[in-house]
Image (cartoon, rainbow, N blue to C red; front, side):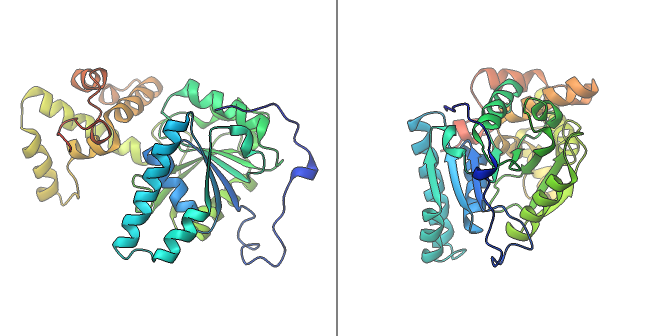
Length: 310
């Protein structure tokens, strides 16, 4: 993704018409999403279905076409199942545009980064966004599940406008969004982000401290790692572990199936970030998880993980 250095000027700042029905809620109507993988596509769909103008960026044309197809298929399935009408599907698709050039995000009111869980990659993206996004009060958000937000914030010249907006997979279905302010994030940025999440996107927002894992993953990741250790030690089969939690604790999905859905590389990355922050043994990734990631067995997205997928 490319981006050119540009100066932000007041003339480039857009303002919603005073008669708009959303003026009392939020002035955000143009959203950029960096990344069109599983999470990025889901976030883009949520925003476009809510009536926002959404531009999605990927690194290559090939990745962009894969993401475009992912979005089209998701919306078509929603229409087939009666979740939305065919007219709503078509209107949502019309609100989506695609690019490989981050420079096209110059007019965005909010940009949400949703790329691989890698601090260096995310930092570089935020540095580019800081240069190309021209609106002076634009929000730069990350969908990170574990990386400290303050590290991304201080990579920009506007650390008060950086915040974590963490969606859950699949984003069009899951109601929860974690809002994670950095130490530098302003109250104005927090209130605008919360208004968008709750009143425009229709999600339930919870506030989390800028600590690795935030609320949900700080509870979830140790549970997933414990299940992987149990399977690794031979204490129980993968089916018995998952059935035990599904049938015994009424979980909708067992921990090994859930790990496959999340992506084993993501589980390992979050575990690594949490272990680096807290140095607690329960956050350390088991050897089996590391070997599976090294072998490219990442779960559903690669076709195999703890289970095999078509």
